[in-house]
Image 1 (cartoon, rainbow, N blue to C red):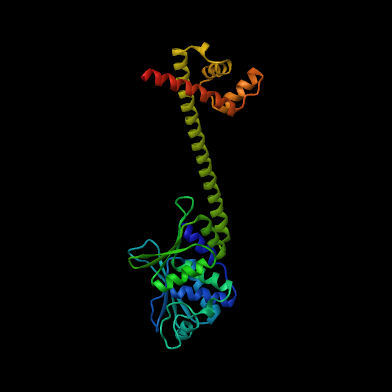
Image 2: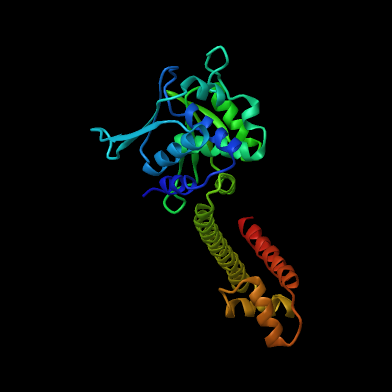
Length: 311
């Protein structure tokens, strides 16, 4: 069972007050049935969603609703069909699908989604019909809705963004896709539509993946620091060997000679580690910055030797 199906099954068992249920049913109608005045037929591949829609019609309008299913050659899943038999025009007008003049409305009327509960319900109904969400365990974060018409897509995107979800609209071959890619915002959407079990699963996976990514970044950073430290140490030893070969240690002062001896003794340690070792073994406080200052003098001396050699 896909994560999308699990979310739809969960929220299909939730019902709201009558006005929010109407907003949800309006979204379901707008995103599922063919625009015909004399027929309301809704199809879905989810039996739980089918029962939910049936219940909404019965509770709100107390009408006869027929449900049936059929198997298709082109899909592994059954198609569940809900057919409304009574009060077609009343329902379409009541749910702001058509106007009083029987003209189809591009977007629902404002009265239908006045409150926050009604807006949440409208988002829920649209997700039931057109929504799809990737399982965070198996793929990247992605939530999308496929909507037929641009004005409806823009309206729906704006409604999502009233909850600060940062949705965007993109044109597709046969319609428009409204999508959200930010992991945190997708989790917020699941909370908004009341998918509490899905939220817990989603957040557990998200926290695990974020922790894993952070660990990988820290490991990569540590590895980069080790490589950088080894490269620095290698260059220091190269400079030291040049000084010993050309001048000998009698040419340098005691502090520089001390650093040279410790670097040759501990060739793979970082500057910080070397300062700690020298402090312990010599009994004198030698800071990392002080050590760095001495190595700069070694580098300057080695550079002068190379320049003289070239001359």
